Length: 150
Image 1 (cartoon, rainbow, N blue to C red):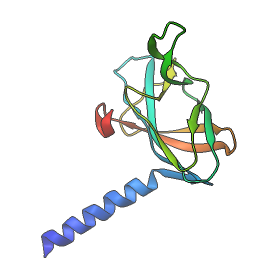
Image 2 (tube, rainbow, N blue to C red):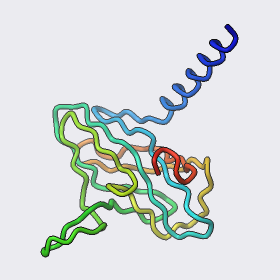
Image 3 (cartoon, helix red, strand yellow):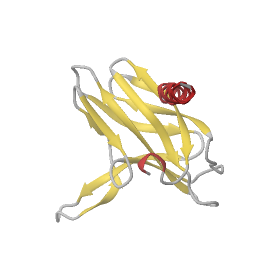
């Protein structure tokens, strides 16, 4: 009985932590906004999250703002010759009823010119800028490299 109680309490603690790191605004859900901890002395890092658009209207993520670096949306771009590479994006489309994952190897936020060291466990404020919803405040958590699929 003690093991079952402990397992239940552990599960509830994880559920509460996951719920605490989700931002809901209008039809948007921003889940686990996080930064993969960069190497010591690094001047850049990458941020990731999942964004759900539960509404009937398309939305677009236009940008990300943080006070400790320059931020740019990044993903796969194809040049006039059909060559694909990673590069800056003007926006990330969020069709109605869809989810978009910003994740390693795909869409992500590049954080360049870090003005402070980032340590695992840090919580840093940021702002997501959407076409219709406007400015949405989030907390980026610095995760250990490899955590959450990084």
